Image 1 (spheres, rainbow, N blue to C red):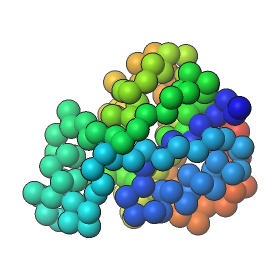
Image 2 (cartoon, rainbow, N blue to C red; image 1 turned 60 degrees about the horizontal axis):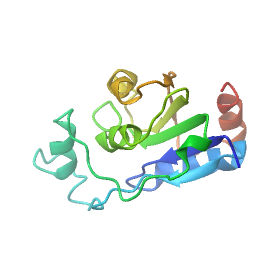
Image 3 (tube, rainbow, N blue to C red; image 1 turned 180 degrees about the horizontal axis):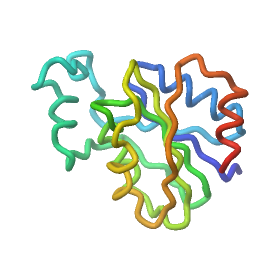
Image 4 (cartoon, one colour; image 1 turned 45 degrees about the horizontal axis):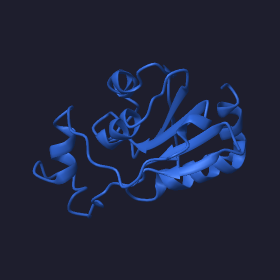
Length: 157
């Protein structure tokens, strides 16, 4: 079994493609972080302050439920966590995922996709959810990132 896991949340499929490419590139297991209640197009309308994603992101304590946890998380030393950037940070479902496990001694490596913004305060906002783990600086990737670029980046850990 691989000692590396690529876990990802993808609202539109872009982050999923990058996560799949990363997993293939480094020989890591793959795990989709799926919300218990799937997001609809209306839920993801960031222009609507009453949309589900807007309400969740306006509350740093929001923890959307996830559909399933990974039973063998203890097997992994390095966990690459992928997500789209929402409001200059990771969606709060990423906090839900991280807080679902004992991460003691693990290395958490965030990666993101974005339509235009940078990582913002992502690391700062994820740090409290990574108790006992080493959270490294993340990286933003475009949807067409090459396997070679992903491998070179991921090989640091």
